[in-house]
Length: 160
Image (spheres, rainbow, N blue to C red):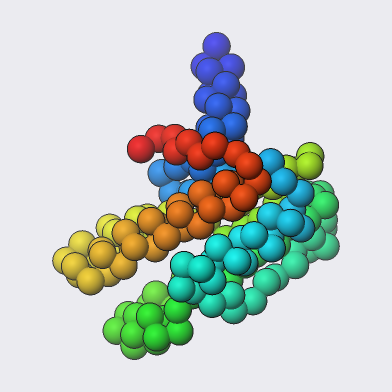
């Protein structure tokens, strides 16, 4: 019974549009991955970020038995922001630039990012970093909403 409830909850979260889990931000978009990726790049730049790189991961994941028509990671950020944070917190460099995974799934696309609030606990007394994590979270959710709207879907946030 518990397994069935967990499965139903997972399905509902995936269908709800942008969704929140403890450590992940996710949206299911009713659009083919190639087009969703283009809208995602546009939304990222419209939010003041630069797309630094798009990594194709399909063949690497195939070696692990995971098969997807499209699996990409979009690396993005604001150069001055990254420089400032890297200088002040060199231990955080591994998490920069920000990343959004884009996966094709049966004619739809799932976009996923680490919830920046995950890092709050590592900087409990650094007000500037706490604010930065909230800005990033809000921007990523807004980017997901923009792409979701471009697909003609209503935007519903789950788990707030």
